[in-house]
Length: 223
Image (tube, rainbow, N blue to C red):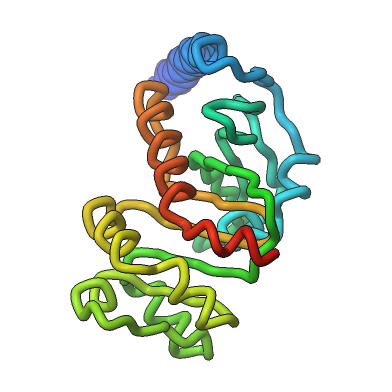
């Protein structure tokens, strides 16, 4: 009976590997078609250099063996953007002390701006943001109690945070509260907790561009 169990396990592993390969191939093809539609370059392979380039962003410096792949990049709607799948690893030990590797994947959207800014993080209020506050990352409060209740906003420059989070921006974010936003240097980024389906890439690119359009122009004219 034991040999049959072993054979069955091996067969399951092979089946999962085949399905995984086919799913990855289908995703690459969909991303390639989207890149052509948007007039962007497409790079399917693993890119560690891009991961190092943007590791100043909080979400992109977690774990180890960090790399981007399925990268769409170039100019679209007048903006220099990069959209990609992202991978990193974390580790734990099981009850017998054996190390286990955990693979994490999510989608990241980046837009380069014509000016450089201090760090600003806007994320939905949650347990992680409460922990961050407890260890010294003070949450910035706003006149809108609803916005302050639903979002954690952190920046070393409160004036910049208030400039970005004006009334129209807060209204937009309240209607799009699944977004996690980071601004630092010339980068405006949104990240997600998992990889988005190819059908959701273009709508979220449009949301990224909408966020950029809501940033006051005087922020760029004074730099």
